[in-house]
Image (cartoon, rainbow, N blue to C red):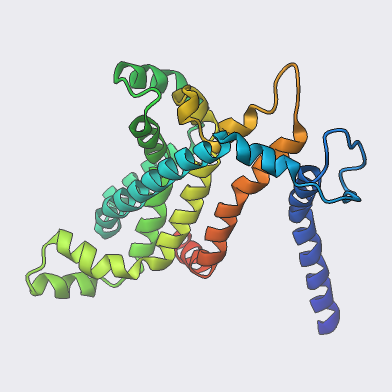
Length: 271
């Protein structure tokens, strides 16, 4: 009976993995085919053709889009980590009704659809001269991803004994020193979780980049890929090649941080 259950679990796991890998498989197959190849997207090509990858790389716009995306993703992710941890520390240490109210507000903000605030947000950013600027889109993406960071950090910090804070305070440490010297070193698992969750969202962001980065020289990778689809033509093969190249950095970071990600997500999201 136990062997049958184990085999069933393995079979279900394989099916789930295959279901999630299927789009990536199709993406790779399409990226390796010529534009005049109308064979099934499930079938691998009978030839090896890397022209789609060469085209998107030689053009130069893809590398520029990669550079813009890296700058925006790294800057916004660092701000989300730093501000999220600093804001979460007092929330986690506050006792009583105030902590519950703040946590509920953070959760409520997370539930707001991002596109519902795009018009007033665009108006405000336009008045600040933040359209087509790195700092403008970084500020917007940081604010959008900050609530989830505060939520995960605060729940994780609640599991850290307050006796450590009290011991550091007796040694003469102020709150800032306590956070950076005592609390921050213990946040590695949840830091990895926040970095992956927010980093992937920022890397894949399209809606905010579409409104706030209208300059071609500031376009991100998602805006670059969208150029292959228009009302008059669709270049599915080059779009697939560019999309496959775009997911490689994200997958590499996840594989590097996955052991911390699982620990941090389980301990930081559920008290």
